[in-house]
Structures are given as structure tokens and as C-alpha cells.
Length: 233
Image 1 (cartoon, helix red, strand yellow):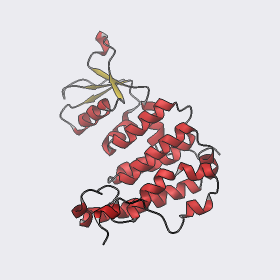
Image 2: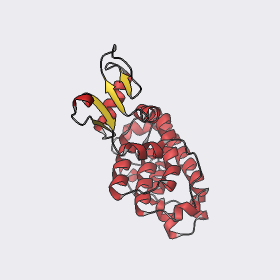
Image 3: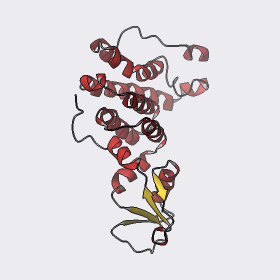
Image 4: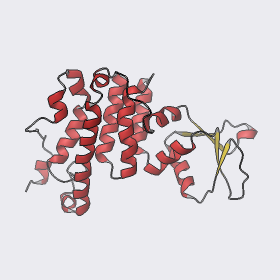
């Protein structure tokens, strides 16, 4: 059995994955450097990627489930990218950075619903347009930290111009989504607010107490939604 220190040593794959064997372009191979490393570390032993400093947790059933989940995630990501090799070769620096963040988030996630959103993002990164450097940084941070429920709330309710969190008896209006402050939806709103996806109103009387979506929100929705078309390339 490997010691905890062994689990921290660099892992060298004995045989190339299908993706590594198929893609000869240095740009293509570089695009998955972090993803391949993350998956390879997990192959060395159950949950060594997530729990390298807590060896007794490696023996748990949950660690075994996570190892299997990580294997499946990597295989699915590999399958998707193999189908879009030309687009992968043409990644911009910003797309490259965001792709690595999305894949590493998928490798570490334990929530199946969030994994669906992250798998969407793997493909959507390839066609995400006009991505600025700081946007790539912030989007990567948000997809890593956003919960599955927050992602679902955003995709479902990103159309209203404003959101409001008030008492249960507040009246609905076309441009407001009224939220019970004691509900799970309110927790999603608070989480999205802390991530910068939602922002407070502009201080005017008519918008006091209202929350609006930041300019990051449309790109985040585009990133995690079910892809509507194949990536260009």
C-alpha cells in the first residue's frame, strides 16, 4: 500500500490516454496539461487528489466513490474534446486558462448536478466569444465555487431585470422575482451575491432593496448552459 508521502509524488502515466495518443499538436496537448495531471494523480490511489494529507480518509467508501467519479469525469471530458480537436488547437490564452479551471473543478466536484454544468462548460469554453483576461479569471473562480443549486437558480432566473428578496406577502411584477427570505432560493441569492454574480441596486429609490445581475452573469449563463451548437473549428 502506498504511504501518504508516495501519494504526493508526481505521477507518471505508463501509457498515454486516447486523447494524448490522438492529438499530436503541442497546443492541443498543452491545453489538457492540468486536466491530465489531476486525473493521473487520482489514478494513483483513491481520493489522493482531494485528500493527500488525511490518509485515513482514503480508505472510506466516499473516497472510493470520488475516485470512480473522477475517472468517469475525465473519460467524458476526453470524449468531448476529442470531438472538437480543431477548436482545441485554436484556444486563446483566456480560453486555455478558463478550460483548465473548469476541468480541475470537475475533477474535484462531488455533486452530480454541478458536474453536468461543468461538462457543459468544457464544451462551451471552446466557443465562448470575446473573453477578456480578467473575465476568464473571475469565471474560473465562480464555476469552481458556485454550488449546483446556485447554478440552477442562475440558469432558470437570469431573465428578470431585477431580483428582490422580501417577505412572503410581497406582490409579484413582471421584472421582479420575489423570494421568500427563509427559502433555499434566498440562500442561492446570497451565494450569488457573494460571488459577484448579483449586485445591489444602484441606490435610486425605485431600485432600493433590489438585486440585479452583474455584467458577468450573461457569460456565466452561456458557459454552464446546455450547449445549443457545436463549437466552431
